[in-house]
Length: 261
Image (cartoon, rainbow, N blue to C red; front, top):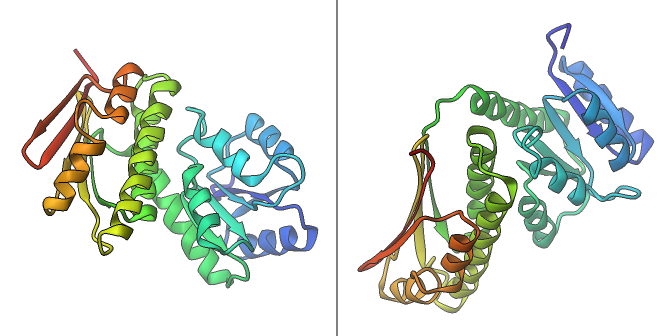
C-alpha cells in the first residue's frame, strides 16, 4: 500500500451495491478494489494481496463460499480476513459461511458505521495474528456451533501461518473437529441444550494440545462415544498425521501433536 491505506477487495456482482460499498470504504479512508465475480477476485489476489475481503455469496460462476474455501485453504492467503457481505440471513447460511472459513458474516442491509466497525475488528485481528508470538490459547463449548467454528477457524489460520504442516493434515483436523461440533450440537439438543464438552486449545511452537472436558455425566458418555482413543475421529486424525497421542483420563480426553523435535 503505497499511500498507507488499508486495501479491501470487494467481491460483489451487483454494480450499484459494489459501488456503494466502495464509496463507504473510501469515505472511511480505505482503498477499495472492486471485483464482479469470484474468478476476477482470484485473479486480483494472485497479483496483489489485500488486507481484507468483503465477499458476496451469490456470484456468477464461483460462489462466495467456494472463493472463501480457496482463500482459507491456501497458506499464502489464509490469514486475510474474509467478511461475507450478503442478503442471506438464515442460520444455515451463516453456518455454511463459517464452515468455509469466514472470519465474520454481515447481512444486508447494513449501516456504513456498522460495516466499517466489523471490518476494523477483523483487520486488527489479522494484523495481530501476523505479528503475534507463537502461543495461542482458545476455549469454547462443543455444542454451540458458531462459537466452535470461529475458534476452529482461528486455530486453522494459526496452523497455516505458523507451521510447515501440509494442508491435507490441517484440513483433516478441521473436518474431524467439525464432525465433533455437529455431533455435540445434536447431543445438546437431546440433552436439554447443555453442551456435552468443553475444549481448551493450546498451541505453541512445540506442540498442539486439545483438552476435552465433560461438564456432567452425560457429557462423559459423549466423550466415550466420540472422542475416546478408539473412536472414529481420533483414528481419522491419527491416520492423517495430525495427532501423535490420544488419551482418556476419567472425564478428560487429550489430543496432542508434536510440532518440533
